[in-house]
Image 1 (cartoon, rainbow over the protein chains, first blue to last red):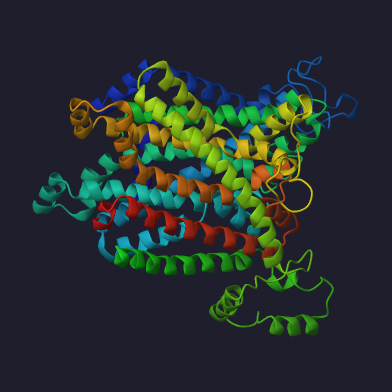
Image 2: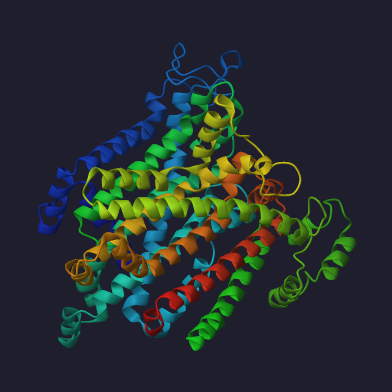
Length: 300
Length: 314
């Protein structure tokens, strides 16, 4: 567990910031990413969004919770409100910026935790094999017997609304697929000749995992985890759309979309804005992970 | 072959049992005493204890589970806290509506997805391929609850061609009066299977087209149409598995679309139950939908081996 979590920031850091001088492989990945326009554009859009939501308290034009009944449901571009106002007269742009903080946080956190836990369990199952493998993989099968949205909705429905419960239920949904992927890549690496020869030279299990297994399996597992972020963003906002995430008046994209449903007759464009934010984020993460998969030469 | 099928069914039993354990535990992971869901809040303490005994909630969890499972196997899923009606009866009606929606969305999604996917594979690298792939990425990235709203805005509010809510009057029937309610939610729900199938089919078909036997067949002078038959035969098992999974996902994952369109299925039922914290309904609906998924996986596995006997040997 500790080995996986100490290595993961290393890899994500390297792939996010492009080429690192020490490794030829990462330099290659970096230059391939730089030549891939779609990936660059998506990364750029996500970066701008990230900065907007992180610095929301300093750059947002209004207070996200303060509205005025006189100014409710004003159209996009209405005086002083670039994206209009919501059903309680609060500035949409401000609320979208603040709302993104929760949407991103609840979307990315479960995948990150599941990456650490699922990745470690999968590597353990794949490397140790035998009974440990059986135990972990059979437990995984049980969670695979649930459609993922249903499992998330049922668990967080039973636990009750709240960000923590939403993250918990989504983490439980993402652990099994990450276990399966890490188990299968680890099993294939474990049977390679150089692992065998390392064992023959008397390397300890820990050394083999650290030196030979981890560097070879982290890439595919990481790329798989990034493909889950898009699903996770949609699911996170979906849960809060159902009232299972943040509590009003705290802004969150999914919840805003739900409360604006009444406005689809009077202000259709305004009502769909939070959804457009979710769509753009999810699309960019999807394309980014596709680009990363290509650049890191990970096969499906 | 028969031996494999029996073994596969035998393997599904522990899975089904474990799924039932997870569903059973939903009541117990819910915060608070499960008894609070049964008695009104101001009940005297001795009455509460009596009810606890009557419901068997004073017994250890494994025994409670066995009793609960016994009831479930007899078709008794408990009573809804909100309506006091048996969960099973309402659930069957709702599940039928969800099935209509999921099946329609799946059929539509599969047809379009397979079409786009094969088109992209045959014309790999051309603009047709790029268009299909972009469409697929859009399909898997779009939050369908948002797409549902956009559909309502376009087709119900602005153009007024399809109704925005409900499933038509009375019981479901396959006539226009009812089908017009089905079109928007089914279209919305089909965007994910379209995206996923386009991707999968494109990958598999282009891989098959690159194999040696295809080159040989081409060399033999086989026409494209006959070639298709070979491609279909080789691609079918994997695509079938993806389709089975997708149908299950649509059944279990229709909650958001049903909420948007007020489609009176299991999703709307779950949504209402979550809102009222009606745990027996959440539990019952989850159990039924998950069991459907387990069954579906079993059927798909068996069908796969029937099409491609090589799978058994693995």
